[in-house]
Image (cartoon, rainbow, N blue to C red; front, side, top):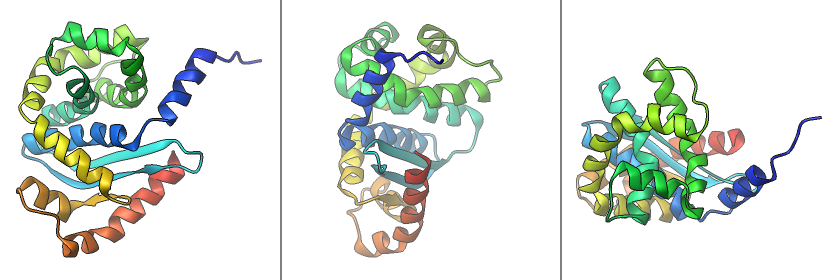
Length: 205
């Protein structure tokens, strides 16, 4: 009989109860980093599954592997910047991940970290410390420095994504990063692809 880790169940329940705004900030971090590396956003989707758990995903394009890894790093770092804006050291990030707020973000970051290990040709991670040492630390300083100069952009994109019904598409994202106001025509043209992606993510979550 498989044992049940009550701590993990409690942590998962807390993650499932997270406000969508926090989940949106994670995806905004991915999107802003893609933009900073000269890439673009195809779609950002956000919502809740039938069981109430949040789901979100950033669909992005960047032009090299280094940029791709930086984008994967950026989701949880956007959360860290929001919660701990003064001390941006790797040590502070490690401490934050062991706080009540930070440990929940490990759940959302785990898939990103696993992708980083795969894309850098490394074996799977074994526990938080191993993930941090091999998947996070090598990219941390450069990634946090880039994002730290764009916290206002992350804030605004988080607000835009959270206010959307299902997410935003490529046209709306392009307008956002060009500093233009939302446009109903762009939203309408983006809507079919956003709704399809949102439906598929909801089914998969």
